[in-house]
Image (cartoon, rainbow, N blue to C red):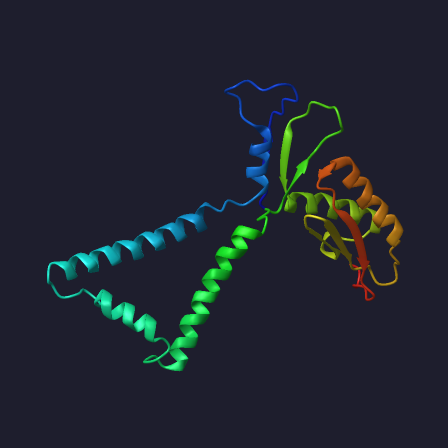
Amino acid sequence: MSSSVENRQLNSGSQSSNGPDMRRVVYRETHSSRAAVSVAGATLVLVLAAYGVLESGVHAVGQPAWLIEPQAAAQRIVDLPAGIPPLLLVAIGAVLAMLGLIFLLNGVLPGKRARHLLAGAPGERLPAVVVDDEVIASSLARRARLAANVTPDQVMVIVSQRQVLVNVRPTSGIPVDLDRVLDAVRDELDQMLLDPPPVPRVNVAPSGVIGA
């Protein structure tokens, strides 16, 4: 299981002019970058603009167009949807709509990574620690497994930004105390002091597995 734990020293006092802004550092580590989508959009616009300038220059010197004359292209756009098969028009519209939706979602959604910040107790000057949700899930699975008295294969933990879901498959003939497992998971979360704090839920499967 891969994990990424990054420690950053958090200075609660005034920062020097050349010191890093820890809030920005933490934000960058817990949110995905939109640079790739921005570069892709800018590159697409740049390529289209360069092609338009090139075709206009070729047309200005009286040379044949590389792909299509600018006037002919403009006329075809004005005449849409005439001259284009309906199936091709639908395909082009679907592709454009998908690209527009991708850019829109990247601009609107927060783009959070599967990571949490270990906040620490209020007033404590502790390092800012960013932990992958997989690491958190592994720790919670261990506590839930010990509380339920089952094997590691019988516990699965899913960690999201606002919720922790613990799925337990009991051993046949040995009941699992749901409240005990939930209390163990809550205690582990309280010790972690995650930010934002997720709400734990425990599900016990109705059917068990045969013990070794």
